[in-house]
Image 1 (cartoon, rainbow, N blue to C red):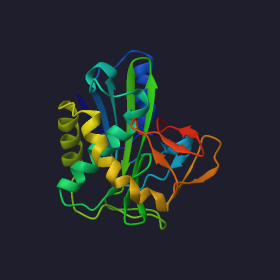
Image 2: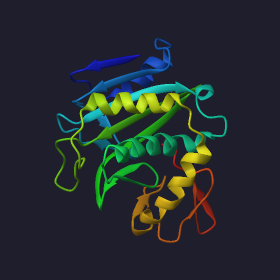
Image 3: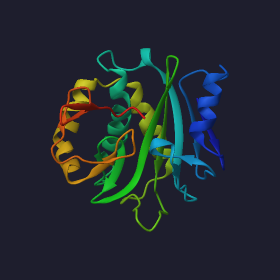
Amino acid sequence: MMEFVDEIDSTQKELCERVKHGIVKEPYCIVTKSQTSGIGSRQNSWISENGNLYFSFCVKKIHLPNDIKDVSVSIYFSCILKEILNEFGSRVWLKWPNDFYINDKKIGGTITTKINDFFICGIGLNLVNCPTNAAFLDITLSANDIVYAFIDRLKKRISWKQIFSKFLIEFQKSREFTFHNENNELISLKNAILCDDGSILINNKRMYSLR
């Protein structure tokens, strides 16, 4: 089921609260074009420019591919959306672990939370507006077209193996970038080794993407 709202504090916060209190049945999706308190990576505030796409959906693990691990889910969701946008003609690519880029500019990202047996994923995508240090999608698409295409693709339960094989090739682009670890330290991806569950190995330390 999909719920469209004009404005909300955060689709992710709202859906997480509904899941916690057992007042929503999956699959469920909340879509908006305006957030007042969006959430980004590491619980940072996400700058939610008006008119862009912000949506969160929840799904149970049993409705995901049999070969997927919990730590792989965030990348799985991100790769599905990236592939859809590519099919529409966009040059978007996925920087490990969950950021959408056009060339060297970020246009969006995902955040994934697990509550009991639910995965709640929030996705933000700059369609028409963006902060000065970011960019927006390089093709014209309606928010509804993107969300419906994403949910339809998710229902097909494409295997993690198939998704990962494509991401493994694209991961090379991430080596030119950095990311913040759980201690908010800036880490280079230059020498990272991508493992088959989507985690990375840097200096013999495993780092995961579920966040």
